[in-house]
Every structure is written in structure tokens, then in C-alpha cells.
Image 1 (tube, rainbow, N blue to C red):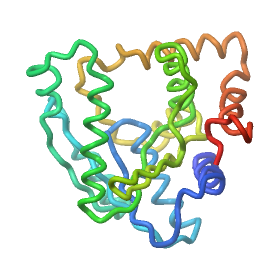
Image 2: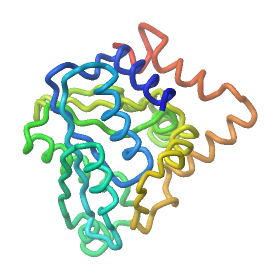
Image 3: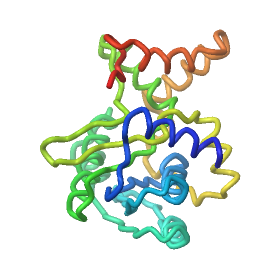
Length: 237
């Protein structure tokens, strides 16, 4: 966990993510990224000596099987409150709207539910488990499908809800996330979504892998490009 906590500390220092007194909602999908984020934030609270609170939130899309007993057990172990909210997002996307490309709308609906949950429970920040490769894949998708240079920012303030989105794992490599998920034996819940592994993001993941084979430092250079240029860097503070 030393590498994980080091990346969280670096992101926190660079982007001022966490402050004493914060009430942080943690979006836990059941995947490796969000489970590691939850574990890391619980440990970071101890080592950073900052007095903030955590509350884990998981939503069901109405697709089965989706067993969250393992997530509940992890939250109990970490002494973090856990709330599950059941939705009909899957039914809306696949049965009612019959979406052929549901990912963008699905992401928007899930974000809306998470934001509402965070506000409902009095949280001022929402932590998401996006790691380094997620940022780079989003950059590639925006470039190749939208003709623009864009990716999510490590910290985003939502004025409508007075909620701040933070991404503490943004410096951490996916390879290390996979390693720690195995090391910690995290209770990963397989996504019941029929499009899992068959998305544009998966295409970008494969493209990034190919780029790295040819240019071994590609990921580090791309990450640096997001934050180094004071005038044009997409992560300019």
C-alpha cells in the first residue's frame, strides 16, 4: 500500500483534494478501482492525521447478479458506513430505450444518482476511483471521437449541488491497482452489464497498450503533458 498511499498523497498535495472536516462520499461500484480507493482513503486518514469522514455508496442498476455482501463486509472492517441504492437504470437503458450505445447515458445517470446520494447524506465531496489509465483513455476518446483535447480533472466543483468531485488515484497505474486488488483480496463484484468489456473505452485501453509497447514511456509522458504546461495543460490549477 506504500505506493498507493504515496500516489494519494501526491494527488492531494498537487490538487488540494482533502481538507479537515470533509465529509467524503466514496462511489463504490464493486470494481477493483473503487474498492482500492475506499481502502486507501481509510488508511490515508490515519497516516495524514486529517480529520475527515467517509461514507461508501453503491448503486444497483437493476441487473443481476449483483451481490454486495462483500462490499458491506469490507466497509464493516474499515469502519465506514455503507449505503446501497437500487435503481432501474438497466431497465431504462436496455428494455425501455433499447440503447445501442448506452455507455454515455449510463455514466450520466449513474453520476446523477451518486451526486444525489452524496448530497442527501450531507457529504461535501465525492471520491471516484479513476486511475492514471482512465485519464489517458478519456483523453484518447475525446481526441479520436470528439475532435477535442479533453479529459476529466482530478478535482471538479459542481456549483449546482455544491459538491466537489475528487479522484485521489489519478496518479496510480492500473497495473498497480490490479496487483493491490489481488494482494488485499478485495471483494470484487463482476459487472452484470452486458456491454462490459465491449466499449469504446476498451478500444482505447487496447490502443494505449499498443502505444506503450512501441513507446515504453508513453503513459508517463502523456500524464505529464496533462499537468506540466502552465498555459495549456488540461490539469492546470
